[in-house]
Image (tube, each protein chain N blue to C red):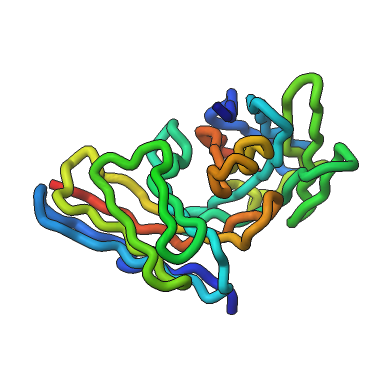
Length: 119
Length: 113
């Protein structure tokens, strides 16, 4: 089975400071990893994904994430936080092995982390 | 504009009254899914469809039905809603392929009293 853990319910950061939102995963095979952001009263918006190759992935709005296979982590980062980054962030995983046996494109999501950036 | 459209956005209903939440995508995607979002639990998949007339259960299918008669539409049906189905529901679609990201609708907030 595949699973995702986001250990922090909320992360508080001052504007201009770097931010990290943590994510760890568990899959039986190799993972595809995704980050999504949800603003109030909106659907989820795709930020970035790790497929293969370079462990540092760059995405939308200045976000990046680092894939660490040994620690099974995919933490979301941004060098300088903005107040407008305040939102709910979800990490998601898709197991390549499970995809091959016909489980479709099922994504498993973490519980979400609320990011609060204060002026 | 590429989008996933859900209707209605908000719905209050009574226990046992059948309802349907519609979902439509204009990106010619093969895959479509329904998720429910509950505090602290993230998004959990209810049902998914890999193509027309091909559907399968996700992690929490009990109490829900789906159909995929056309590629663009994937309605979610609650035959006899119960209060524990009060939740925020999202429809998503993606193209075929292992590494494709999903596109989400705006969400439907359902309250069952």
